[in-house]
Amino acid sequence: MKVLKFGGTSVGTAERMRAVAGLIQALTGPRIVVLSAMSGTTNALVNIAKLLVEGDLTAGSLQIEVLRQHYHIVAKELLPEDEVAAEGLKLVDESFKSIFSLTRQQPLAAAGEKVILAQGELLSTRLFHLYLTRIRGERAVLLPALEFMRIDQDEEPDAAYIREHLAQQLAQYPDTELFITQGYICRNAHGSIDNLKRGGSDYSASLIGAAAGATEIQIWTDIDGLHNNDPRVVEGTYPIRELSFDEAAELAYFGAKILHPSSVLPAREHGIPVRLLNTMQPEAPGTLISARTGAEAIKAVAAKDGLTAIRIKSSRMLLAYGFLRSVFDVFERYRTPIDMITTSEVAVSLTIDDAGRLPEILDELRRFAAVEVDEDLTIICLVGNLVQEQHGAAGQVFDTLRDVPLRMISYGGSSNNISILINTHDKKRALLALNEGLFRRAVVTP
Image 1 (cartoon, rainbow, N blue to C red):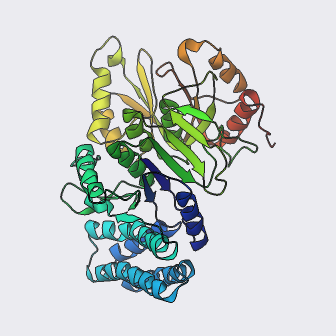
Image 2: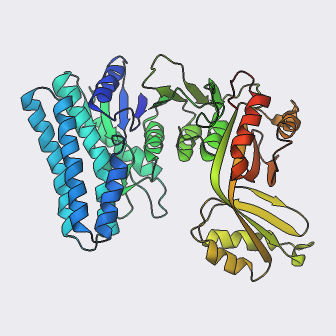
């Protein structure tokens, strides 16, 4: 069994859907295909939900109709036969009927928002399945993700439930090798429609792969794998052919947009290779993520913006056990993850990327320490084989960045990561310097 996930740009138009169908049909053996919403749809649905929450029914209803008409055009283009096109238009109108019905709910409840957001994946999979079966004559089954994908009370995937209920769904079709299902959407512990948050289709694919005992998980996007540097900043970057699970997880968390940070975890737990491929260039080898790691000291660089640094200083910290626990307890109470941390004898410096509860956090910290806050910071993450620092990689990195002010350094906590905190206005300079100093294959623009 292989699991293939196609992102929003891969199924963003009728033409792209036809191309994806060709890729799928060229493969043999059991396959589960996980689709995102068509590109732009989730953003449109988020905006519609926002308007309805705000009570702007006129603007909300107008945007719903605009999106409905867009999907009518897509359906007619994708399904050239009149009878099949009529079925497609009926499917489209059923989804939009669900959305229009929520305009009567004032104010729109959180559960209603989740129903609206789910329509993107439901639309893309229903239209794609109709195209595969009715136009291309493929034997395929549409598996409803809402029948087997579930999160628990803590909003974490319920792996046991997913495994059991996916097996039940697949057992109904013993002679079928091709299944289509939705990414991103699920049910919560109360049985209501929910989702795995933005970017969650990658996570869906990995969870499904783990539950189905897949031999490989393929993530198809519009770029040929994870690149060695940020192609939006540096020209001439190149895809990395192999990464370990840990290296990929670090890159995804610290800014590599091609892969959702959580999506590596289920695959790693079950030892399932993940292959990142390009629908626009399917012949490219992409990036293979597995338990193996190569010999390269530094393979890739990623950058994560929007960081806030908090410096916590107290004379009480000197030789005092329990101080760090007091600090961490504050962040745990406000469900705010910490990205980086460094300590000295009298101070702790750490970073967060979610400042939503920052005022409450600072109020509590100031009860037992002096606190300083800096914003507009960026973490530069470098990954590779750094076991026992056999390559002198750290020295090379710091020499390369000798003209860039460094705010924090995290090194030694992982055998495959060096993290450096800098001011965001120094980000481009840092990435270009690292590219020149570490990856001489790439061509750097001034």
